[in-house]
Length: 222
Image (cartoon, rainbow, N blue to C red):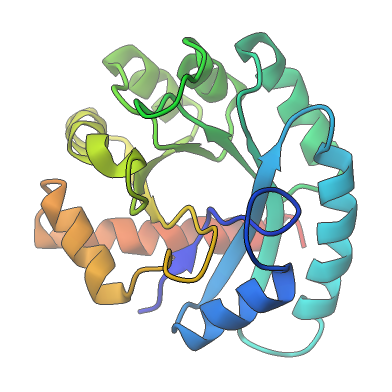
């Protein structure tokens, strides 16, 4: 089994690497595929997607087993704008939509978590002190909830895992990759999930969820 990173950043937002180097490093780190999800709002989402689409077409045409999907992490977007921007981004070619959730280490506007799950985004990233009502709504709309390996955002992993699993929701684990050193190994990912309170079967399920979601989005929006 390989890991699939569904939350990464490049020089199109605040990442340190251009897409080609980010992909190369993910391959050499043993990952099976990745999503490019640069930070976006109304001002830059088209610029990001237009460039990522060209890159995706080139990478996925080379016959390599390692594949790329592209999309956005809607970041500090007003809750009332998230639904409309999600629709617009998908129409513009985004395979995956992540929303920058209400992490406790940033001043994310209250209501962002709820707006994201109501919009039916693919992943709600580092959602902080997420409530049961938000999780239930996300479950009904097919949203995956993120366990983060990134410092700061990972502080509430235990709360996120407990709340989502008790209600029957689905988790994924992502690096929120910005620069070399952010990507964790397969074994470290398992330890982080165990540290969030998951048992062995739950750990395997979460790691498999990353691949299942990646394959679904790659197959649905090639």
